[in-house]
Length: 455
Image (cartoon, rainbow, N blue to C red):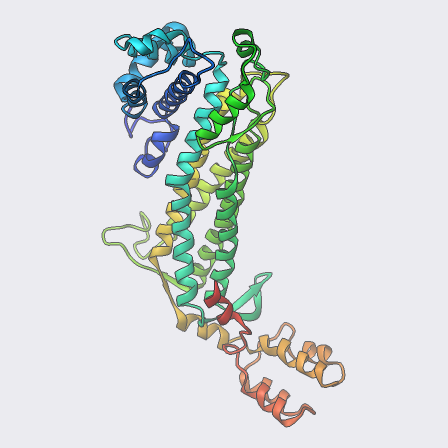
């Protein structure tokens, strides 16, 4: 069967292929090879620029530029050639070394240094940096912008609906009123924190040899300061230096990032479920898309499918993210290979996260607030003012305030007249009585509107 969006096993390459496209340059097999090529080339250039290693360089600016073009112009045809070499070597990183040697045959300067391609490196020196660059690039160019689009849309909704009063529900029951904008602002505050956490996690890297001790480096150049040189190289790639590793960089930074994405996803999932519920209550209507069908048999249906799709993808993403965050930092002794196959699923986990964020954003764009529906619910639940009345009674020393309101309101549905009759009979200062008599469920919102506008 020919591979296509119809025959793909993964929905990221099938049904949702167009939505995951932006991650392909980072986490596809092509993307991984391209990042490996870049690391190998930059390592060779760095070695050639070091006067203490005269056997390698120096390279002219023309040679340096031509080497960097190999990475910048790396094509699918180049990737296919690397895979052909790998079919013989049965080693993916060694295949890249051999491909690079093929590419520099016509350049005398580079050809002189051909055996310094992959010099003193173990495969994981290349892999850890390639994966770190892929995650760093995807985070910067794709993931954070997509996540922040959701946050931005919610912030606009919080401001636009800051003053629209809404019945709260604690334990699913009618509770102290709030505003729609404030409830959305609560989510914005959580997502702002999540975004900042995802952004600040550093991506560590290492290039210190087979077991992290510079054994081969010092065997060839015993008097050279390899540790400082390696640190400078890793940091030149925009990554954090990890001085203490085994054969592998232990993935603690990557695990921290994956954990941060999972925590962010949990907040979005909480939002998805709340919005699904509010749609069910009628607080939101959904804009109808021409030609769309909500049910194969019930023509009236307009389902909250975007939030359901988001919730499902978040579940898949977090299952993978949490597995990877737990698995990747664990390796037997100086190295086992179980992290290698697991790492190939980092893009899958982040891909399902991206799908979820896009689905949530799409759902947000379809929502229309039904303020009249919310106002009707508030007007049908005057008993929620019991909290305000008993609290004012406490202030003024009236007897058994909580118990009196419990007797009046618990498990009952009161109207405005019944509650105002009770207030009128209280021995309160006249100004306080008037203030309580003027209070309505839709005005008993505290600082909700102010807080929503401040986010």
